[in-house]
Image (cartoon, each protein chain N blue to C red):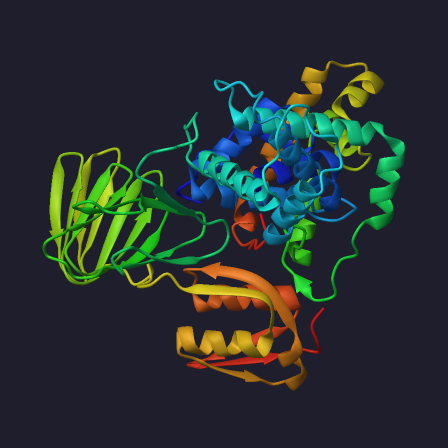
Length: 332
Length: 160
């Protein structure tokens, strides 16, 4: 791997994976994971290998809704004795206040380096993705497709310029409004657009912007560049310089492709792949259509996706121009 | 919440137990909300509480038995968690583990396969806990380096 995300101390990570980490060490790991989407990906990889030969169930996060609703229930029927002298609010009031505190806490965790919960007069909206892809509609109707392990924040009500702050990667579809420029802050880079469709990529070394339609002005480290359709601006963090690439490489895809399957039948998966990649998928064994799979892909090539599916379900695939043939006995 | 659950899982090795731990800690946070020091980091409080709660669970035999009995069976449909690797990848990992230097390999085995705590390993082998930490860290490093090309192919959905 040419671009290695910053690796955390091996000893620390080993301690964490072995369940020997102290709370402080666990927080260090948590902060490292949040620092860069690449770190989370790397962690998953290492964790997979590390836990490969363990007996027992693998780690799985609980259902979020259920998790919080169970807590709410417990609040409404407190089993423990109530603190003396306190006047309890109405049941709904308790749950609502609780959720408000929790949402502040969650926001607090999601902004690295923050030591206080951000309680500002102008409410800041924050969206953070884990392994999912999220489509967010902004107050002016602009659309942001957030890739995995990315985050976006913006004021609930814009006053003047339309500004959003981005970590990670996203594609944008910005409503035209010459009076109010749309501004994306991606690390040290500022991207100013009037009405356009573009894609932003960030990692620890570079920030890249691909313009699909419209016009974008990119500022970073004292340098600036205007980008037209099919052009890509690459900001090198070390060099503090923006370079122009034209046309932008197709590999960085146009839109963040949201392929997210949760116990989805292979028939539906095939349909999604046909739509996204413009291929035809043929089941040589019709029974395979009933197999189910849970997996998430962001910005991956068709080959990559097929590799995963065939490895997961233990089936074979064969590509022939625009046709993909799926065969195999049955899924495991 | 996710980070806390992950941390709890590394200690308890059980998803439901981890969930209960994190839920209990949040409930306790609510109870204590007025007494919490404003300067104190809430994150720090949460992680410390989860840690203490989990250690308590481990100490309590009856609670552990309850979770052991309820442990989930792997679902029939193929769910991608960070446990699933192809046979080739599994073999490569096995090879990498076999290639560890002797003391490193021994200590690593005791930790991963005999589920021994660092302190227990240190005591049994008559070495310091720091040595155990270093050796297991070394094992991770070697695993990482030997498997970097393999790991790139691992796709992890996970609900992490």
